[in-house]
Image (cartoon, rainbow, N blue to C red; front, side, top):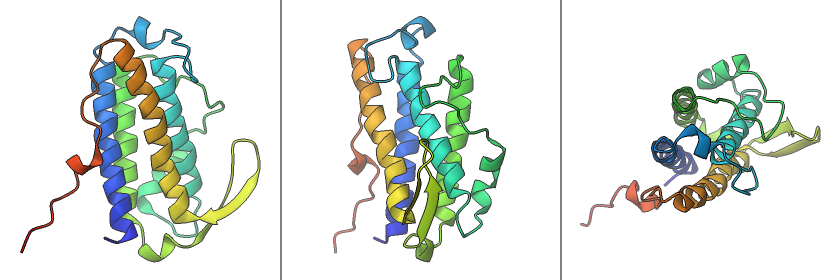
Length: 180
């Protein structure tokens, strides 16, 4: 399996897990979603918002890569979040719609990615204003692992509210290899 196809698999996995996360969260009233649960980003909604903020920041950085990717052009119209702990949407339906749009951008971009770009350097400036140059493929992997890390926090918070998130194992979507 090529590195590009692994990134596509991660994009599809993250889309499925984000759908499950929002389906589970949507079963709770907004008052519970915004309640301070003592988590790193306080509430369920703020943690879900932080995941999206991370995605927006990274996709905006990736949209400035040496290669011009059609799928990332729309990121230039999306405002850069001013804080890592902001709540992007107070209404869950708007949040779900924007999450789906962002997941679509990620999947389209991973499909559009050129295999040789994955190993190229990518220079970006982080939220603290520090400039770094790192391998693009490693940064894309970080985008996915950041989501996984914080979705784990959300699943814990949902469990505390007796909401079942459902299956989270990636083998669920890994295709079987035909036995010969």
